[in-house]
Image 1 (spheres, rainbow, N blue to C red):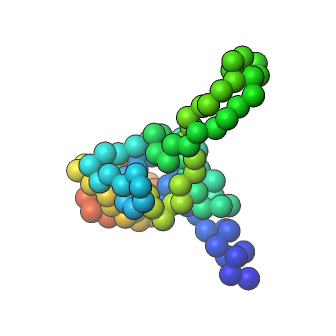
Image 2: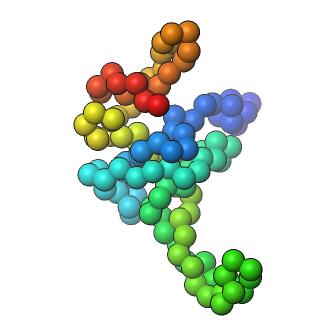
Image 3: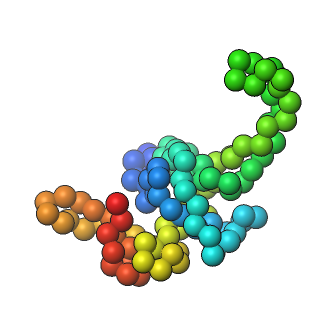
Length: 114
């Protein structure tokens, strides 16, 4: 029952958001990175330039030579925090109704996140 409740929970991060890695090997509280993809079922996200791994690939149409390719691996969402649009620092988010529509806002500055 607990897994099902977790599965239906809405992620606090969306594709295109600017996030800050708050824990792990790529922790850097000064730099915000863009989210490339979100996987809500596994509670993970792929973030630009974070958690880079080497993939050994066979030659194919996209990469005729094959070889070793560096690419981003998924990061657990608990290690990410949304960047405040005003200050650029990590912030939590809230949801409120504005003009009849639910919007996300930064709890530190109160600014709406698009």
